Image 1 (cartoon, rainbow, N blue to C red):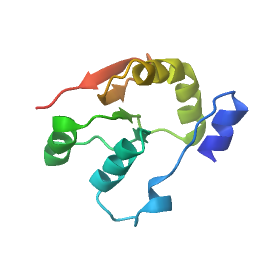
Image 2 (tube, rainbow, N blue to C red; image 1 turned 120 degrees about the vertical axis):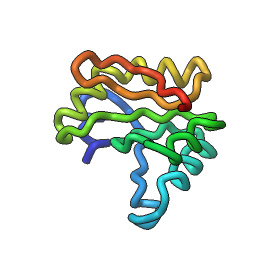
Image 3 (cartoon, rainbow, N blue to C red; image 1 turned 90 degrees about the vertical axis):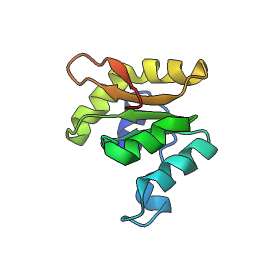
Image 4 (cartoon, helix red, strand yellow; image 1 turned 45 degrees about the horizontal axis):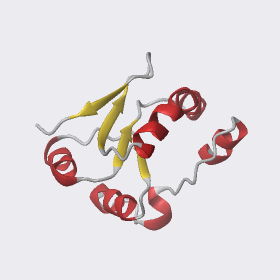
Length: 113
């Protein structure tokens, strides 16, 4: 559904959902590691808090984008607004965990705590 809506807005995105590959209750670290090995960008609504956040940010070489919790239509609109910035991170070979500010569309890099 998200993939089709993005394509309808002119954004080609090869989206694979966590639950397509992993059990619903499997640790998201497995998902993030898979995405890193496949050179994919992780889009998530999880905040990567506490130990999980520290583990993922320590040596993660991929890109994780934390989206705000919102309905699918609003998420699509936000992704359309910021897609070029996400693509820029990718084309520049940058890595890390970035949080999206919904009101501004700004990407802020999350640092290890």
